[in-house]
Length: 232
Image 1 (cartoon, rainbow, N blue to C red):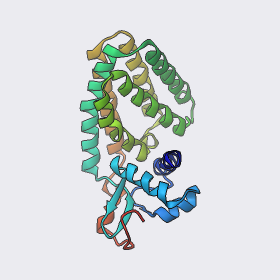
Image 2 (image 1 turned 60 degrees about the vertical axis):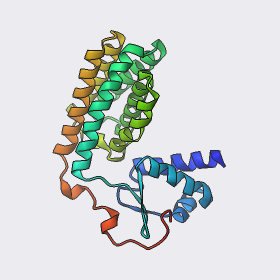
Image 3 (image 1 turned 180 degrees about the vertical axis):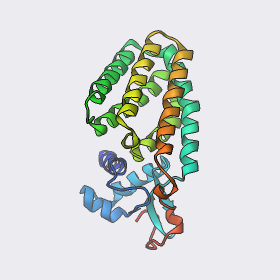
């Protein structure tokens, strides 16, 4: 049962991240069970986990929906990332292991190699970026910080952030990952925090400058939707 829940969770989460289930879309346990090949029980439990991570909203008497965020909420999410991930970078510079540093450098070099192409594989860059930032959280040695930031760092993935980048911007982001590894290798917490701050600020500016309010779907609470139980 536990394994089935984990697989169902990963399947639904990947569907949200890759746009199969876009923000604001209505989800039902029955439809998700049919799509994933699982029974409704593990699917319902997986949906509860995704709700706890703020990726799914349960609206009483309306159903379950992929979470949506207003422009202001996205700006606030990035404000939190700047505060918390810069602190995580500072702590990682002090506590990172040789193995973690080696893996971070490997990821950064892979990202650089991909982004030097004229048509980078954006999906692969997104995957490597996700691993990089989560490994920085692990390297900070602060379990509570990692748990606190876990769901926050997922949101740019759901928004397909890298699809908003020009080739120059995605290369700049890649270079910042390499500079972060240099700061970690030098055990320089101030340098690491400064680069992480600049990295997230530039990501926020890129995303917000290329979107407008019309691109953020309204909350499902304000839309007509089938009346059913919270989990479909």
